[in-house]
Image (cartoon, rainbow, N blue to C red):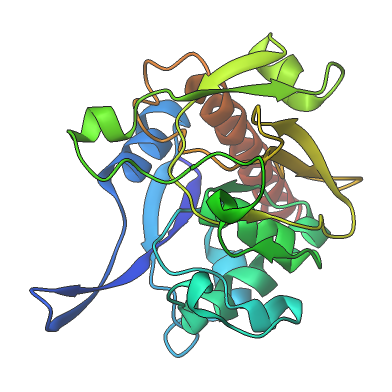
Length: 257
């Protein structure tokens, strides 16, 4: 039986500062294939090339990846500032309506880092442009130096709601995670439930209340070392199971037709 297809939202890059490319991190594809048990497919984030409706029909679930450009603050009613960094309006145009459609349909979506923020903005929430500038907050950005292992190393605890879906999934109310982000949630969107926080109060885990499908999203990067990490593995396992359930639902409808 064919594996469910997971659309991995890619990012726009310039190779050698001149050749435009759409790309996705190898660790994202590895986590989807080897842990979630699904077929990874990188999606070019450009509404001139792909449409949300055809993505919904082609893929069984979606992984909203991290990325250097941030969601444009116009998407949540604020003017851009230097602190907001760089933007990718093409990605905004794909991911935000895609999230809303997945929530309505019950189609699985897993948000990671920027993807976590996209889920919040898609549901009407807002973002802080720079967490480390807020009183009492820590620097959540990627360490500027060191190996990849050091940059993606576990750096802080996330405390989860005692009766929430993340604590049930991980079998613990506290987990260790990495942290590689500058922005963070300011105001949760409609139906957004913040289910986990960093020690400084930064939101780290969320889901969409009363959504008919999988909507768990995290601010950290679970794709790193996903096959061995005791937190990453159950998250991708659960996402893969949700994608298989969605794909099976489609196959049942086709057989009945």
